[in-house]
View 1 (cartoon, one colour):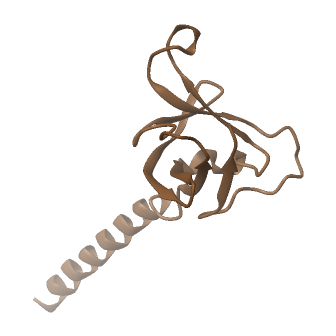
View 2 (cartoon, rainbow, N blue to C red; view 1 turned 120 degrees about the vertical axis):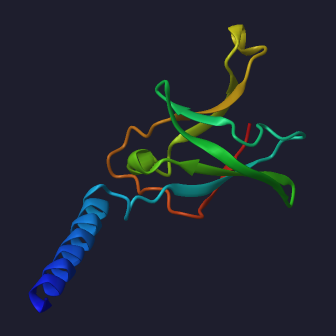
Length: 132
C-alpha cells in the first residue's frame, strides 16, 4: 500500500515538473514588451488609443494611452518584445494615414529605423519629444 502511494506521489511530482519545464521553455517568462512615451507638440491628439505602430510594413506595437503633459500630447507606445531591440534613440516616429495620398484612412505611427549600429536602445519609460 505504501509503495502505491509513493508511486502516485512521484507521478504527481513528475507531472508538475514537466508542466513547469514546458512553461519555462515556451518563453512565457522573460518576454517583456517595451513601453515608452512619444511627446507630440500639436494642437490636437496626433493618434488614438490602439493606433498601430508600423515599421517596414509590419505592425510592431500599438498606442496604449494618450494624456496631456504640459504643452504636449503624451502618447504611450508599446512595442512587442521581439522588436524592442530595433528601437534605437535615433529612430524617427512619424504619424501617417493609410489612405490614398495620406488624406484619409486610419492613422498610424511609422517608425523609420536607425541606420547606426552604435546608437543606444530606447529604455522602458523613456520620453521622446516629437516636433512635427
